[in-house]
Image (tube, rainbow, N blue to C red):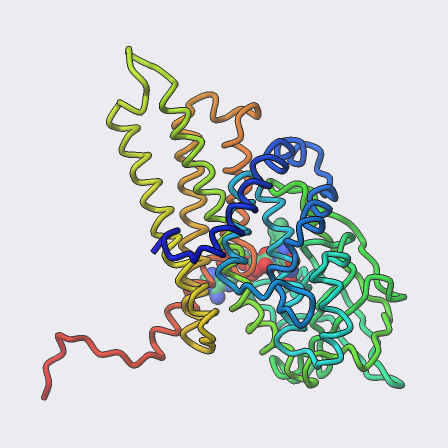
Amino acid sequence: MGYHVLTDEQREIRDLVRTLARERIAPRAAEIDESHEFPWDVVELYREHGLFGLFYDEAYGGLGTGTLLALIAIEEVSKVCATSGLILAVQELGSLGLKLAGTDEQKQRYLPRLASGEWLAAYALTESGSGSDSAAMRTTARREDGGYALNGSKRFITNAAVANLYTVFAKTDPDAGHSGISAFVVEADTPGFEVARLEPKLGISGSTTGELTFDDARVPAENLLGEEGEGFKIAMRILDRSRPGIGAQALGLAQGATDYALEYARSRETMGKPIADHQLIAAKLADMETACEAARGLLYGFGQMADAGLDGADLTKASAQAKLFCSDTAMWVTTEAVQILGGYGYIREYPVERMMRDAKITQIYEGTNEIQRLVIAREMLKENRVSQLTAVA
Ligand SMILES: Cc1cc2nc3c(=O)[nH]c(=O)nc-3n(C[C@H](O)[C@H](O)[C@H](O)COP(=O)(O)OP(=O)(O)OC[C@H]3O[C@@H](n4cnc5c(N)ncnc54)[C@H](O)[C@@H]3O)c2cc1C
């Protein structure tokens, strides 16, 4: 399954995003990487063209065009700049708590501002001592006169210091394990809430990754998402829906690197002919293209399932598979792209070294690929499948 599954309307929007990415974002990509500065001009471009609307229903000022197209938009932008693709993916990640568990009132209050891009969102689950084992979190939310007081800290939070709204997970019952966790919407100007620092990192340099601290941060009771104790379930349901966004970022990186390597291999000559005519290079290109197409099949398959209204176990497995395969493909394909460019692949003047650095994080965040494999295997074991070769007694 590839691009041919798209309807005419989807193609039209895909082409608009592709043009914006090529003409407006690609020329900025190297600068964004080198400056380590959050690209507000890209946010402005998304606002002008209504691209944040791709993630929201029409009732909240969005386009209502569904999951598949939202993934395609992230893919198209990430072909030229993974930091800019991540801005779209994290707007979705930070909004999903409201979309999946918010009351009508909460949705009306926040989603239109997120759909227009006036506000940016973030998702704060990870802490310094709890990443894969997120239920081991230490941040607490103590009930007190009509609200909650949050205390603790969160680590590695994308969009720290640029988001206006954070979906934050904290323990309302520290002794109750998974079922003691609750989810909250925290506005950036909440007294007692601060961004303590931003982390320098290997790739996606224009994206902020920060530590959040909560020192008796007062959150009103109406900002609780769902019921007390439902936070862990909400966090996992969010990840089921958001991980493919990282898959889309990864696929964009992989396809972008493949396209660049192909163009380079056509014109770079050694031993009297273009390197693309050396069979070892041709085989690399063929394998890279095939891996991208296979990744696209899993990713778009997830998009179609989500748009068809599927939920539950099927979605969990498809989501983990798309994230796992797209991100492993991105790491492998971008490394091959560097190899095809030889020495030029390793220097900053050419984009593939940035793409290889950017690809690495897609195997780590929103659940490492080890965790994705655990999720997939767990779903397989639940399926109660029998082999066709099992003898029928
Ligand atoms: C740039 C960046 C942006 C991020 N953005 C966000 C964000 O916006 N919001 C947010 O909440 N978090 C975010 N994260 C956090 C990210 O999701 C975690 O770093 C990730 O889930 C891994 O957690 P950890 O770093 O604590 O590693 P650990 O959980 O300590 O894992 C260390 C290693 O052990 C492996 N491992 C752990 N448990 C198991 C197991 N049971 N079986 C097999 N292997 C295992 C892991 O796969 C990994 O290889 C971000 C991280 C980075 C670096």
